[in-house]
Image (cartoon, rainbow, N blue to C red; front, side, top):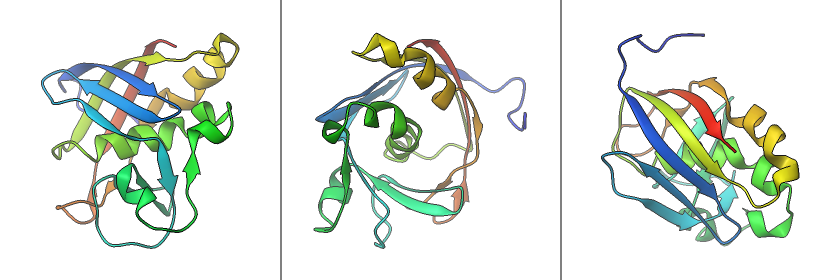
Length: 148
């Protein structure tokens, strides 16, 4: 895909797709710390809302507030891998809008047996559509996982 400009700023970042809450630290920005909840329920434009691969998802406190069904990482150890990309994109949707994010990411994972799978799930380039404040604005996200 390589749509990200070669001179794009590369941000060092750390991500913990935790069981209770997820934490994302991107250099130069405040830490994003929200509950590790994810839902695809219909809802208005809220923080953590992102459209990816044709489906809309909401990550964080807003997912819990739906009062409907939502996934939690704590429900299954493999959710740390299964939900990793969506929760990371949702966490980025809590930060100020950027046209492109190029992250060199260190990821926290307690089950070392899932490390290779997590690295495969997160590595790559993606084009989510951010749903907050700049409705329908496409982002380009490039992830290089340094340590999982």
